[in-house]
Length: 193
Image (cartoon, rainbow, N blue to C red; front, side):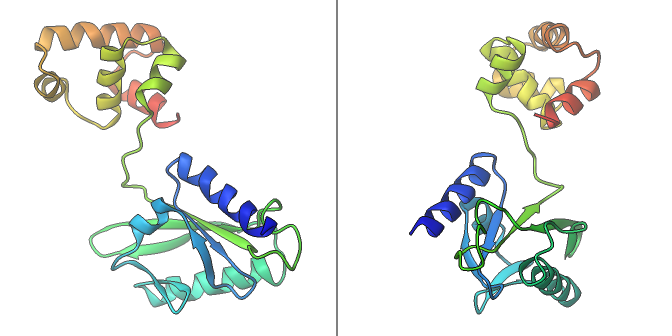
């Protein structure tokens, strides 16, 4: 029970940061996954017979090999990401590693974790995080969040029901509070939160 509670705690931590994560047992079977990981399952990524598989045979083989390295040979972390190709889109990246808190012994239920990142996923900080970090008002935080999503100022004004000039003034206030000078700089800063 202790082992499974550690697995669940690790998955919960990944879920809170919207990070898809899969936990594997000693045989390399998927033991548990979080809700963000479930959302990735489809044509490109599947669980087939308790194994995580990619639509790309080479990616599946690379994942199997790396899982074996991490679990059996106890490599502390993966040497780099495994590319999970997707037709017509950028590949996702899978990082496989051992987590000491989850795989605390060879008898622990969880022995490895794979964290998957999608370079096309829009990741934006929450309104409360923006307000706390930069002392933004609610309106300024909403505007900053939309800038982080790559929306134009005109579109933001239309969607928020404010005049273009109001959006420009809010953007100037956001620039001042975040010590940025362009929408590109602001988006770059916010992508790191």
